[in-house]
Length: 172
Image (cartoon, rainbow, N blue to C red):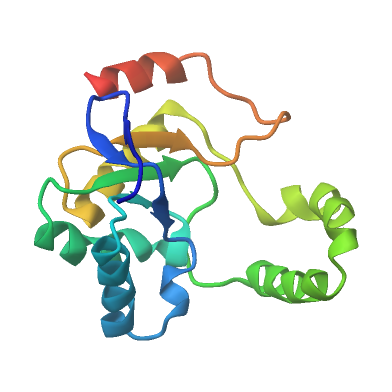
C-alpha cells in the first residue's frame, strides 16, 4: 500500500500521484482509460492535471475515471500557464526544440532562459483564475478540486495583489 497523506482540505490521498501531462500522447481513449485504471489498481489515488495538458483535453479524459470512482480520488489542477489550443507554429517549434534537447541535455538551461517567454504566456489574473477553475470543474465533472495551483510562475511574472482574495473566496 502506498503511503498516505492528508491534504489541507482534510482529504486523505496517496503520497504518489499520477501526472497527466502526457496522457493524451496515447492516441486512443481506450488506452488512456486503461492506463488510468492501472494507476488506480496499483493504489494511486491522486491525479495531477492542468487546463493546458493534452491541448485542453486531459481534464475531460479524467471525467469517466472520476465517475467510476466517486469521492475516492483527489485531483490537483492548475491555472495561469498558457491556453490550450491547436498547435501553432510556435508550439511546433517547441516540439522540435524538445527533441533536440533530448540529444543535447546540457543545453537545457540556456534554452530555457532564452525561449521560455517566447513559447509560454502566463496569466495569473483573478478573472483568468476564476474562468480556468470553472472550466476545469466542468471538464472534470466535479464540484471542487482538492488542490488548485499556479502553473509554473516565474520570478518575472506579475502576480496581481487581488489574487489572494480571489483564491480565498473560491476556497470558501
